[in-house]
Image 1 (cartoon, rainbow, N blue to C red):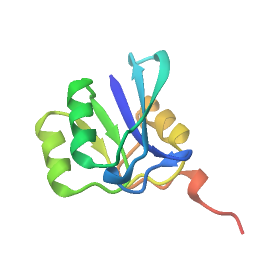
Image 2 (tube, one colour):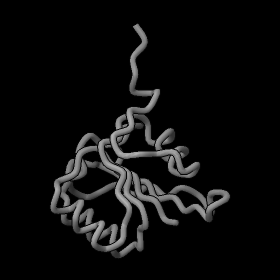
Image 3 (cartoon, rainbow, N blue to C red):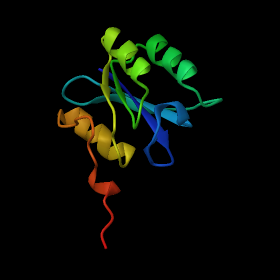
Length: 114
């Protein structure tokens, strides 16, 4: 499975169309295959990012907020979308690998301790 995470700093980008970089990881169902690939985007925008997702053969997208039309397009293309994710991209990726990530998840890294 090829997973793409939209990233801003070390967190999941709050909005799909505002991501400044993406991370692509491959998982064979048991472990990660190869190294993480980081791609710095030349410009922000949902169309270019959507093209990258389709051309790269991505199976799963992990992002913050996403417009309904892009969400529907990806699900029509049989690409799983976990949206509304808040927190670090490394935590989100680990949860995706373990099968415990769900849309709307607020990760422990996002919770501030007072």
